[in-house]
Length: 459
Image (cartoon, rainbow, N blue to C red; front, side, top):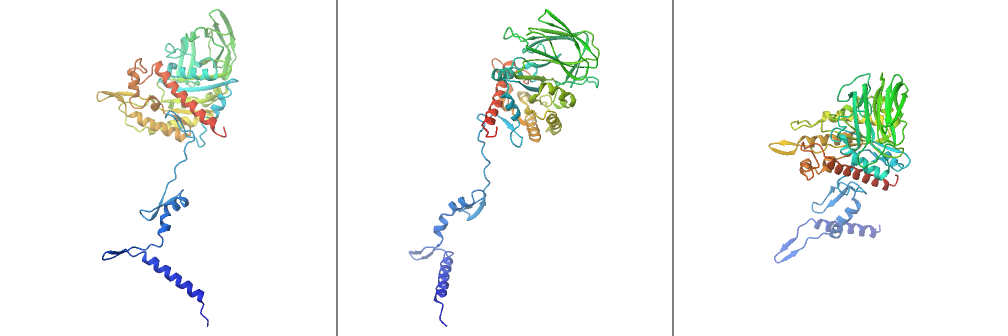
């Protein structure tokens, strides 16, 4: 039979290649002064291996020439196209990073209608020490005149500079005080029942001079018709009958632009008064809903129906929550898991009641105490910050780190020792100057977030 020369040639070639490959496994051979170098048929291919590995396996694996093996490479997280420029930014824990979408859209219409912000907090923000400057800045940018909602009575009325407020003969109920099933609490967590010879007077802030109230609204409930007497500008006296209502009602006082208003219930029966709102039809309004001693958990005590009825009138676009200082102590060593659990319930309930409202949790501020003879940040602050950030994560809202905005560890000490001082010597509360500084930080964080939102293609 004829021999298949092609097949024979193929087998010889394969045997030669196999022999050469086997020689690559042999080490270099030394014969006297001569060295037979190691033969490596694949040397040219191996030289390109790292490049090929980078091309073929860039997303998952890579070739390591030193170990002659393939190793796993963890891909980098996508970079934020609008990174925070100075560390003073919000963290948005919502799945699509759109917590503040409704608020930013509302701001674009502030020249046509009100944009309302509820600023809940404790004694850190009472007296408008921080809210006042925050409100002033937003109103300078987006319009609006007036301080918004003000409770009928307040233990810091004489301390507040954004409005002049005096009152007498009111029985108060609140989240942290006396409560009654017959007296449902209002949006601020307060409610007031008029006693004989009751009175409440309001005047605009002393500075700038010649300010006046534009619109004045009273929020109340009453099972029977109630007589309201009020005096505008110390001269115009008005007697009005408030209609009976089994739900929250808003009564708009009939008055011209007012430099003062003094009101009283002449024959109170079943009336419950909550507060007045001073505003106009357009612009931004920040309602300071501070309550000394409140940890934030107390917000759960406000009736759901009451909150919904208030929101029908006020239509909040943003809720800010500033709490924590009434929980931490110098000697407390808890991890605040209990606080986290209860505040998650509070925030989730607010999300249900205010479904179209953005919510931002403001982390605890710095607070110092005497530790081993030195005034410094108390250890509980770090644990509370961790708990509050987890609250925001679990409820998928936004978070602002106030502690970092202040300057971090021992910043409250620096605030208190500044000239002029930015904080009180209790190393907890701010002066108005310190409040102005932190209000700017909060405003900057919100406005930067708005800039990022406006740059998104789908905004």
